[in-house]
Image (cartoon, rainbow, N blue to C red; front, side, top):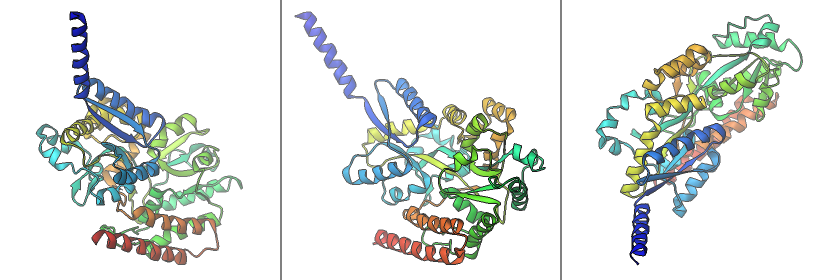
Length: 419
């Protein structure tokens, strides 16, 4: 009887202990080595907080799927404590008050507050909305210019001299495309962040700073599409909507712009010697900061909020930020991690890995994030694809039409929100 009582007391104690564990859920939106890196960090956090906090990382689908699930969760109440959200999609959540503002948590955490200056300012600013900090950088990158050194040599170009201007890029592209009908000097992409970059580089803007005025109907923005339409028409460039990565791997593309996160993959798998450099400036040198950030979902209990705060801090500790960057190829968000011996050794061994940080110091900028932006961008993408796949399409007419429709989207959104 005494033994039975002891066993019952142990079971009750274990039950009470488990009941006191604060359970968190984190939704992540990537697969492969990227998701495994997130899972590994969560598992280490759980070991360090055993019996107190336990986080369950859950794959929530790609960026679009995750955003849809979060918006549905605002109605159903089925929401995680933290989520990895791509930055140009987060606006509706911010506007709806669904994302926890972090300043109060930082102010109550003097030890962490003293570390804020250790974040790269441009990356931290990427999570500031309407003057308030809402998240921390997670998987950030910039695009860089890749080039096929084998095709450079065949075309009589110096494989160790990448283009420093768009004029040089076009000159090289024409030399490469002259090698044969299936060879193209440049591949034009329609990915969202690259489309924004093309407009910026031409001296234009996509949307106003406050998110209320569409600006891609301007002559500068239109000139970006016209520039590439001309290159495609003459056979110097090729346009891809999907399958661009596969086309790059054929070895028939001389120059292409992709994420710095592609560098390791291309080095390991491309059937050519990979050159990589910063993106040359055109009218401007602006490049976008891409990827996702880590956000805390508002509305949870105080205990869960504090536990989620501990997890957020754990993700951006210098050692974890460094490990995540070295593992995935994304940028570290911490200056001390960038200066760490392991990172510097990586870049000394292969200077190609420096390019995205060069952008970060000089020309990298945040992408539009406002609530109605994704729908407005969709109209821009339609105009872009029309102009670059139909050589008879009028860039001015297509862009001005898309801008009018997109402005209606903005007006309706802000009218409803202001009301």
